[in-house]
Length: 206
Length: 206
Image (cartoon, rainbow over the protein chains, first blue to last red):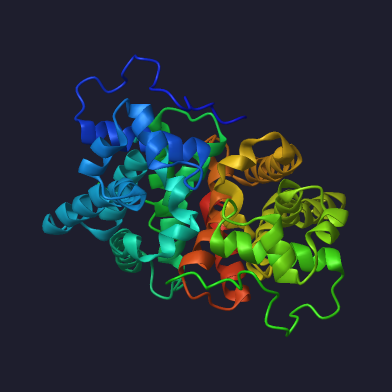
């Protein structure tokens, strides 16, 4: 259960794990690993640069500070699902079908990112200004779940039901942290089915 | 959305908020506030002692280190619900009724603690040795939800359903962090009802 020791003070073992990646992507990847395993406060830009095997000055060419790196990582956990929800809306999908599809997609995004960045949502720093855009986008995603839930649920459903749906989808972040995770497809299917039961729209959408 | 500024470098404003509390309780309360609002890494035992208005040596009389304080705070988020689950078991409550009662109680514990300590579950430090007991107790609580879910759900239910129920209950930690929270009773009722829909045992237990 101990966090993996990070390669402090030297570049990583040599086997680049993202061989075709740009420097920018390598920085994001190394930072995500360090933030998730050592913690955000305990990770400096110097440490990130060392993990990538570049000079700190090179890191600053791509990112102004550590906040910008975290903001970009966090935004990448919600933006694909927002884009996908916009697609569903353009296709005028029925609410229950759209909810099922969005939950499936969103759980896939949260489970298949290389590092479980969602565990950083609760950092106190995320309440500050550099993360305004992330928080606004996550709220838009929450609003999307609320609107679809309200449209899919029977009249008189709990006002908080959309937030519970959103919470159920994001609970895969904790499941991924705490448990040996089954293939993502199993959890995607289970969560999407659970969302429909939660909103009282059980029949699997056509 | 900014975290509240903490009273750095001096005792709190003078109006003790826990007038009848022991020194030990005051330390736990001040630490919970600082951990939740400034972050765990950014909070030193010196800062906690200053917030209480005691010397650091006095703090060390009660707690060996910062880890012990966090461990005690975290354990207090799961132990009452474990005790309650044991009571339910002694009463031989029916599985769906027990699940409804436990979810109601557990959500109450998570919502009514003075500080939202559950947001600290994701700290990387929590994977280390001083938190073994907390993690073991939280796993026992998860196992309790799994067992009750398996007993209450129809045959052939998803293996992961108990974990989703646990995730739904703990999602109130994020709701409390992100949203202006309605009266706890509303969320307790909504989550407990949602849990029964999730496991397919909708009829409100008698």
